[in-house]
Length: 500
Ligand code: NAD
Image (cartoon, rainbow, N blue to C red; front, side, top):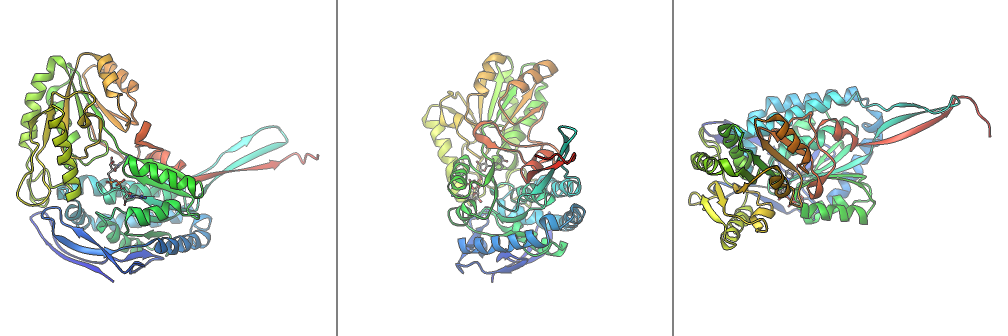
């Protein structure tokens, strides 16, 4: 079986990692059924870092069997919430102890800066596990009175074996968003990370063992979407599927669920979020947050504020300051002390983004700044701003998932609301204004699952996150996610001994 041994010797992190990279089933690592491997590529230079075992549909079957056994014996209704919470707290503590190592792996695998991996991915990931650890012994039903002869109570029971499949842009953080509520509610898990970024999931597997989770409760399969992802979403004994990824694949997941056992599905999908700047906004604040909104994480955020609407009166001034900001972003090695932007995750994503840039140009939009590769190797793209766009252009309608923002001028509230809501997506939005009535009025009329006022891209474990329209179904995070991982049972009692 493969292992990953690597010595980090960087300005931000020094240390050695050494962990198995097989499939993690029943608390043990082994080779995937295919005995083949998947290469993991360094986005800084396109070189292979290591290889991980490639799981197969037969591995999914193996994982479901042990997950079901764990559910029926040591987890589910057999494990009190306080016990589940204790193990989850232990896992969070181990993540905290190994935070730098996990952040370094994330930076290496995804190309995100080490600094942001620490401050965002790891911090929010750990917070999420702790938050749901707190929930584990507080998941309760209700007593419902009907007549004097009759009462009922509800139990919020775990569903059983759940499947979870996630994207590559925040690998470990998304994993924590999925594991947290599922474990707190008592489900067992078959988890698949993206084949592009499997490293932190595998490192976490060792920490899951160290935290003392019974074998079979969490199983991690490093495999490809069309094989392992398909097998998970089509499995007859997986009763719940939670997915984070593209709208295209989300559609497929739902189809697989419908064609197999009608498993419950929640989907966190793509976005094309409007970022709205009114003429009464604090312009410096709006410029700084808007740059964060679209350029943070190399623009690879589902909630990226990629359509930037600016009111006519301040458009020219905003464009001037926003351009200065975009051009000041320091591109560089994710492990250097001053880098603010690393490479895109893969050659495939690099090519996809560049083809959108070409499409914008050929449809008549203007590249105001950027639009080109940075460096001679690896997948860096300069922060890019398009102007002179038209509403039907591909770069205005479709999710680019890279550091590419389109600037659009608007006249008034009615105009911007019409344009902002003119999309199949509805994940997030941001409004910048110093008039609280205007900001909240617009926030309430935007068709989006999250609206930030005077900031953007800030997510907390306690606050639900998810999409309207084709950006998804259901919510991750907060109390809302608990509902997705419990089945409600009503127990009716004949208190009055009524006879029929
Ligand atoms: P993707 O849909 O290509 O892949 C996501 C996951 O699905 C991967 O693990 C992949 O292996 C798996 N997969 C692929 N084909 C499959 C199939 N046929 N059956 C089952 N599983 C399959 O997305 P991506 O490129 O990894 O991630 C980018 C997308 O994720 C963007 O659209 C982004 O907006 C979205 N995203 C959404 C959120 C959110 O919370 N709404 C968060 C992060 C990313």
